[in-house]
Every structure is written in C-alpha cells, then in structure tokens.
Length: 144
Image 1 (spheres, helix red, strand yellow):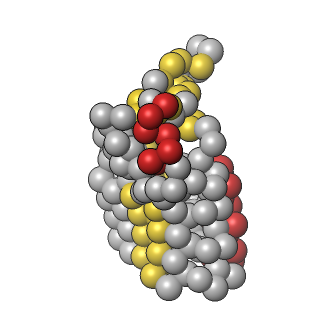
Image 2 (cartoon, helix red, strand yellow):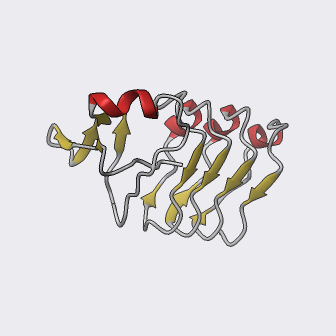
C-alpha cells in the first residue's frame, strides 16, 4: 500500500516543465530510516488528483500493496504500473480510470489480488493477466 507515516516522511511534489505533471521524492528523517528500512508498508494517501501523473522514485522493489481505492483518479492505467515488481495487492477500484487494462499489469508476476472494479475500463482483458499464476483474486467487475 502506498502508505507513508506522514509525521516522519514527506512527499514534496514539484511541477515538471510546463506539462502540469508533478514529480516527488520520498524522504524521511535520518533517525527514522533504520526503523522503516524493513517495513514493506508505508501509509501514503492521494485524494482527488485528476490529470496529474505522479512519479515516485525508488519504489520498484519496496511496495507490496497499492491501495488507491476511491481517489477520483481519471485517465488510463499507466504502463509503468507493470514495473512495480514487488506488488502483491493492487486496488484501484472506485475511481474514474478509462481505456483498456494495461498489458503491463501482466508483468506483476507475484500479484495475488488485483481490483480494478467500478471504473470505466473497456476492451478485452489482456492475455498477460491469464499468465499470472499467483493471481487468486481478480476483480474487474463494474466496468464497460
């Protein structure tokens, strides 16, 4: 889960060029780094971010759970989601995600639960999802 202890971690966001996109790095105070180094869950909530593409560095092998349900996200599922190789649980339900389900999600080889329900996704389910042998709980309901 993108969870981050907000009293000890910060997520500074800054504009990237004139694109309207933002970029941020996660930092924590020196005395808290050792305590957090073995933690696989960092509380981090994003609410009502529409039209912004967020880039958070050094997360490819840190996060095991991404729970961004009901955040009013709109647009397509970014292809970089497939690069988050440590994810076991992904919940992007109850947002406004549109377009096709990204084939890059098929790269999440250890994902156990994938919830994309209650969005506006359309098209065929990618064959790459069928190859996810760890995926026990897929929920793609309530889409187009």
